Amino acid sequence: MAIKWKIDPAHSEIQFKVKHLMITTVTGYFRKFDLEVDTEAENFRTASRILFTADIDSIDTNNEQRDTHLKSADFFKADEHGQIKFESNHYQLSEDEHHLQGNLTIRGITKPVTFNIEFGGIVVDPYGQTKAGFTVKGKISRKEFGLTWSAVTEAGQVVVSDEIRLLGEIQLVKQG
Image (cartoon, rainbow, N blue to C red; front, side):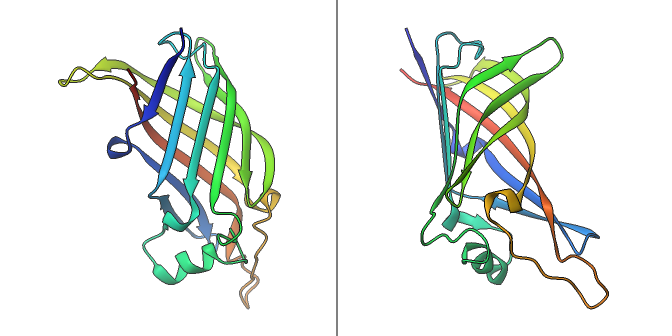
């Protein structure tokens, strides 16, 4: 019998980091996101479906002008591609490492990606809800997903790096 899990948005966050001028890191968040996982058992080795989405309009880098630029055609083109989507059915565990492989779609471009997973465990909270915790880490090339805007300073410094680091702190709630 399939077990359904849904994200607990109050105890989860989706973050990205990118180098700016190659000397500092800018951090951003997606404030609206969803995650559903179907498993055959509570150990997640039997994940048969993992579906994550994040709303581009919820992007937040703590700078309204930058957020507007990221939503524009220079980057995400949010008016045509309103969500980032990740789909997987392959959660791989070994003794020391956990990996999640799947397809990431950004701006209508889908590419295979692998995320490193730290499994925090499963507990029952004070309200009787079964919860599972994960830390998800990965890196992507923004240019591979059509996020090709680029600028160079007068001194020849790249303004925004190609590599984007992704980090998710995820808490799932067992449904039913």
